[in-house]
Image 1 (cartoon, rainbow, N blue to C red):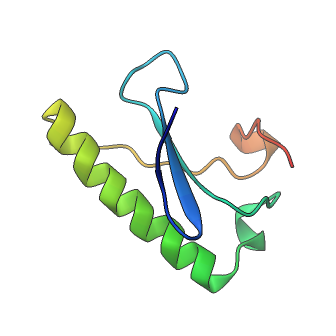
Image 2: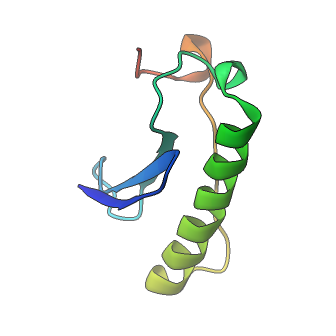
Length: 80
């Protein structure tokens, strides 16, 4: 379920079995993190920061884990 969309990035909620998991990703399809343009990086991290704040408030959390799985050996399963 998509919950927010910006010019360059989007956020999906409840993609996995845990309700608190979210995915923030660029709208342009890229294979690896290093393929993103500077404006896409800025939007991705800005969107991640906004979503993190909402997740903390919604779940009453005081800490979060924010991760990037960049490549198959890092656990990346989504491919272009």
